[in-house]
Image 1 (spheres, rainbow, N blue to C red):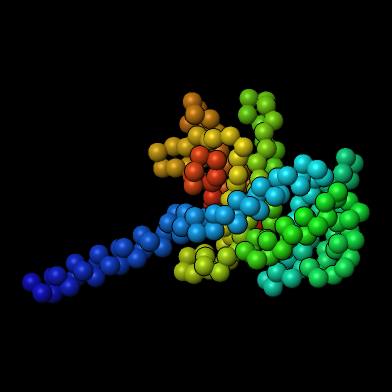
Image 2: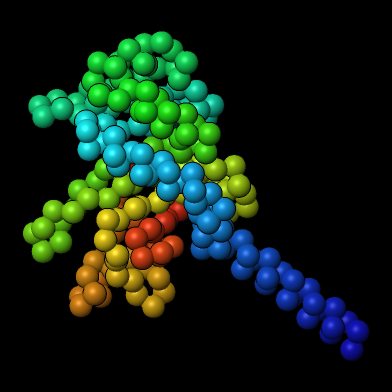
Length: 201
C-alpha cells in the first residue's frame, strides 16, 4: 500500500512537472512576465516603421552586433554594426527621421534578447493587413525543451479566430489553420500569438 502511494505521488509529481514545462505554459508565462517590455517594443517599432520602413536583427549569440535593413521604394539597404559603433547612429540619422528612438528600440531589444523584428503584410479576402513579427532568444527558454529554438510572437491589428485548441485560424468559417512562415501559431490573447520555432525570421 505504501509503495502504491509512493508510485502515485511520483507519477503526479512527474506529470505536473511535464505539464508545467510544456511549450504552451512556458510561452504564455514568459509573455505575461515580460508583457510590458514586449508590448513597448512592438508599439515603438510599429510607430517608427510607419515613418520609414526598416527591420532590425541581432547576429551572433553575444547580442552586440546588430543588422539594420532600410527599406525604400526601390531598394533595401542592409547594414551591420556593433551596437556601440558610431557609424550605426550615422546610418540611422541618414535614413530615419527619428534615429535616437530607433537606437533606443535597439537597446530595448538587446536587453530582452529579441533577435528580430519586422512588419509582415498578409491578405484576407484580398484585403491587405499587417502584423508585427518578433522573435526572442530568452535564457529562460533554453532548457529543458527549447534547445536551439526561438520564441516567436505575432502582433495582429485586429482580433483573430482560433480553434478549440487555441490554434490560429485563417478564417472563422473555413476552420483552416493559418500558418506564418510555415509555422502554426497559438493564442496568447485575441491579438497576440506565439510559436516555438527553429528559425528566427
